[in-house]
Image (cartoon, rainbow, N blue to C red; front, side):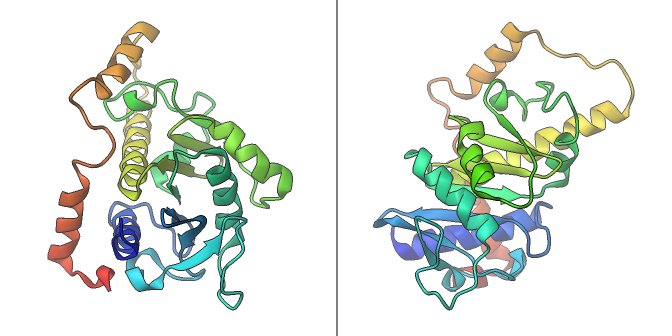
Length: 239
C-alpha cells in the first residue's frame, strides 16, 4: 500500500466514524503503522475534528510515540497507547480509539457485551476489558496491550473502546460492528423484558460462522463501498 492510499484510508475512516456517530469533537483517533517505515506510524494533529481531516493532514510519529517533527502537536493519550499496542501486536497495523455512544453505555455495565445479536457474535470470547483511566501513565499504558491480548477490540470501562486490525478497513469494520452490537444491547435492555442469551455452545457456533471458510470478516468487502459512499458526498478527504 502506498503512502497516499494509507493516508486516504485514514482520512476516510475518520469521516466514516463521524458519519456513524462515533466522533467526539477533537477526542479519539485512528492511527496506522507505516508498512514502508515500520518504526513509525501516522496520526492526526491534535485539535482537528473528525469531519475535516484530509489525507495530507496526517503526521508521522516515532514508534515510541514522539512526533518526528517536534513542532507538531499530537495527542500523547493517543500515541502512547498506540505505541504499546504496536509493540505487542505485530499483526496490528491500525488502531481506532473512539467514543461511540453504544460502547460508552455498555462500558458502564457489569455484564459487558452480551452475545445477543449478530453484531455481537464475532466478539464472543474475543474482547478485552480494562478499567478506564484518563491519565495514561506508564503503568496504565503497559496494561493496555495486556488487556487487549489477542482480541480484536478492547472496552475501557467508563470510557470508550479501541478496535484493531491488520488494515484501517479492518479496524473500522470492528469499530462499527462493536458500536452496533452495544447499541442493540442497550435497546434490548431498555425494554426490561427477559433477555434470551444463547448458551455458550450456541454463542461459539455463531461466532465461528463469521470466520468460516469463504467469509471475509475483515472489512475488505465493505471498504470499497464505504469509500464510494464518501466520494458521492465529496472527495475532499483524499486531498
